[in-house]
Image (cartoon, rainbow, N blue to C red; front, side, top):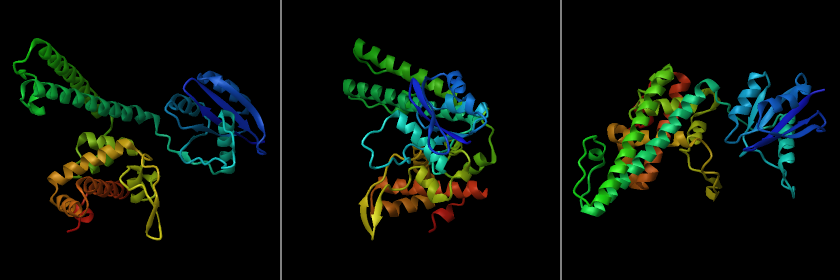
Amino acid sequence: MSHYCGIDLHSNNHLVVVIDEEDKRVLEKRLNNDLSLTLDALSPFRESLHGIAVESTFNWYWLVDGLQEQGYDLQLANTAAVKQYDGLKYSGDRHDAFHLAHLMRLGILPAGYIYPKEQRAIRDLLRRRLFLVRTASSQLISVQSQIWRSTGLRIKSADLRKADIVVPPVDDYTHQAVEAGLSVYQTIQREIDGLEQTAHQAVKLTGAFQLLQTVTGIGKILGLTIMLETGTIARFAGPGNFASYCRCVDSKRTSNGKKKGEGNAKAGNKYLSWAFSEAAHFAVRYEPLAQRFYERKKAKTNGIIAIRAVARKLARATWMMLKHEVPYDAKLMFPG
């Protein structure tokens, strides 16, 4: 007898449902988020369990990693793609867990990518870096605005970043507020520098990283981000699939040449979307062919659409480079 398991995961508990080949529930149990409890509940089915489907939530790492280490076959369910029966009037945790196991039994469970544990922590380190970069920028803009409205002087951000910056004459309260903002910015910047150094030391600079460095506009941080967020390029069937995952493709549905609606614009990887958007801005500044493409596109639409078009080109180029292990060629992506 074969069994299939579905787990509906929450912040502090998870519901485990095990079914047999006839969709009969042989186990249904709500457990606290403790791996030992999960292993105890599944132990009677260890030999007959074909797989475990876990709902992809913000806190899946501990559960999926722990079960995989014990030899279980895991699938991370893509909840955005799991379609429920439209006639249902009620849905709850017990039905959701059962539905995951049911789809797995039928072989039609839309599964997501389980990023390898070994590099996941470094990837998340770079994600933390990006959060800190935005926080630091927010502090700098706040300080700049406070000085501007108090003195009428607009100090450049580059000058505010200097360690020896001299604050213009202001009242004591404003001076203290400005100094506090600059101190916070400098502290965050030191942490950013430390995270970058750790990421460079921890990640083996593979051939994929070296290929990404051949792209005008992609430096070390963007290269590391793209490499780590992408994972194995083999999981993307083609350049269009990868560009879509990077959120570089318009989210719309058409029929007979007419727009019929829009899809989920947030589907995909927001970090890759940011990385290719940053790379596009640098490419437009330093790559003449990309600049000409951008200007032609901008003349027909606007700057935002044009820069996203450049980002899409770079995303498609990245897939082809990593797939075929060839360096970047601007002439192929931006023909004159």
